[in-house]
Amino acid sequence: MRKVLLFIASALLAGCAYTKIETQRLPAANAQQPFNNLFVFSAGKQLGLVKEMEKALGEEFAARGVSVQMGTTHLPYDATPDAVYAKASELPVEGLLIIAEESMDVETSETAGYWVAGTKDTPGYWVPAQTTQTFKGLFSAQLYSTRVKGNFEKVWLAEIDSSASAYGGPREIFKDVGRKVVSKLAEDGMIVDNKPKK
Image 1 (cartoon, rainbow, N blue to C red):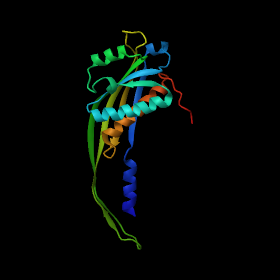
Image 2 (tube, rainbow, N blue to C red):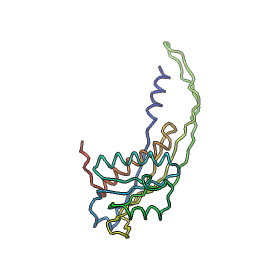
Image 3 (cartoon, rainbow, N blue to C red):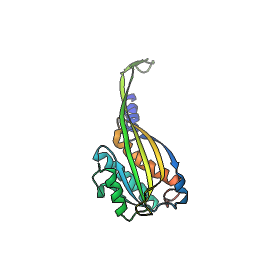
Image 4 (cartoon, one colour):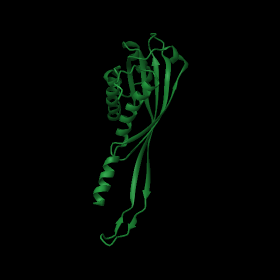
């Protein structure tokens, strides 16, 4: 029974990420109306992770009624900043959102094994030592207005810390960062938000 409970607890950890976002609306944002459509470029070090983030971003933006064009639809996932700005200038969008992976590290910790004493009804048992890994990612996000063609005016920026257990790993971090960035943009009044309130 205890092994079953430990398995359930481990399964609950799978797919969980903790993400903290610090944001700043820049003075230029005060003159901007919430954005209805964006070009979104996720700058990551692996294509599979970028696609995970784009999928999460697309779902969250769609739920709020924001039209988006994703970076990998138009550019290689490792495109240069100049290529990203050039493509944003060509597209019929009001803004450019760039989310960049700054770093991804793994922290390992160990828990010593211990003995659980038995009772009169159950025997005692040994809980073996455990090694756990936590993935930690650092990201940045910047939103630019492209309403005046040829002029990229930065209106919003964010620093993002995210972590996940080895069960979820970097994929869960990328998905969670995508979801949380959209929520934070809506919370800060930077995008339209037609998502039904619960």
